[in-house]
Image (tube, one colour):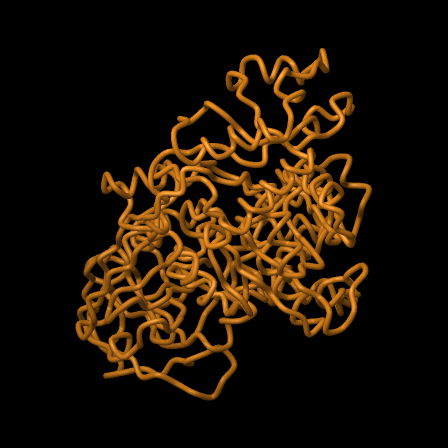
Length: 549
């Protein structure tokens, strides 16, 4: 087991600038020897230990140790490219939609529905519709500015809808449909007390309420009062279904209810609001939606919407794919908490890097995660009814593939410790702008140098190599021992000519460090790599956000 772990730790390290990643190594080890899955705790323990050891070695030692394993044949992966075929789909006929509740900026969970819906529309030369579900006027949840946030997030993700509108723009049409259903005896107005009473009568006992027996003309009179004199909770419009249906959710579901106050998205006073299911059913039918892709939590909504289609006499209910829950490890929070925290100043905005841990798209993009990486990762997940376990390493791997070869390398010292060399061997040194390329950057040297505090504490009084420069015995007054590259620890550094840089970490902490000259020429939104630290994105001159290793 140890040999298998060491081999994959070395392979992973040599592929990622000398730093193996525990999660990736565990996956490779278990793939090579599936029997080890029975002892996964022990495997993880050993992988942690060996990865730590391998990462402490120089790149030369890592390569030397890897050679001992001889020629390693990497298994060829048979990867599915893109999404699987869409059931019941015809070229040029597919219409998908994304119907977000405008409660805040988008997160990775939302993106699964958006990306798959948009991608399928593209694959089949179809249409993608964006419909804002402003069917709940609660101002503590819905904000007009959230519509702008969602639009900007989709634009950043490269998603352009073929049609975009507010659900509230269709309310008048939906009132007429409701009135028609009441006239035809397919719906009725229920004035039973909310929650208590109606819930009991439609629950285990399957008893119908007296309102079901009202004549259509009586229900219509109450329906008209809903728009004028009745108050919130006084009445709702219900679809007339089978009161004995084994699924309680399908027993006379609510179609419309009274909600007092102005719609936060439009400023208009509607008073009567359609339910999510009534609105979705009508709009999906009228806009010709053929396929709905959404989370499994909507399974009940799907059944209610099918019932509405059935009562309306509409055929061709959209092919619906309810995919599994996207499990994101770490802290869980609601958008309402984030909104309140932003208002109190706990976060600087929806793009605060600390919100990246909650999967907020704009926060991740600000850190340097490319929209295409998010898209690629979601497409790779596919559409499955099983719970999908998202890992940050999956996202970072997808991002690394996009940015690695375009990210120039630079030195950055986060916690500078000044040292003085007893002599200088050159005015400047050349270092590769990218490993393996014949393009170089010039780094000015001096007797006065700055190294990172962590490197200084770990290697004090030891012989180390200042990367690309010379070997020294590390101390405040450092003795230069030679120029020849040796198998000794290597650390990064900057000379007296340097640039002051702010590096903002994912948890919001800031490192006010020093970087080599040339960093001040990096343009906003450009991604670079601080050697031995990780990939960072330039937000503005000399201000960077840490993305990942």
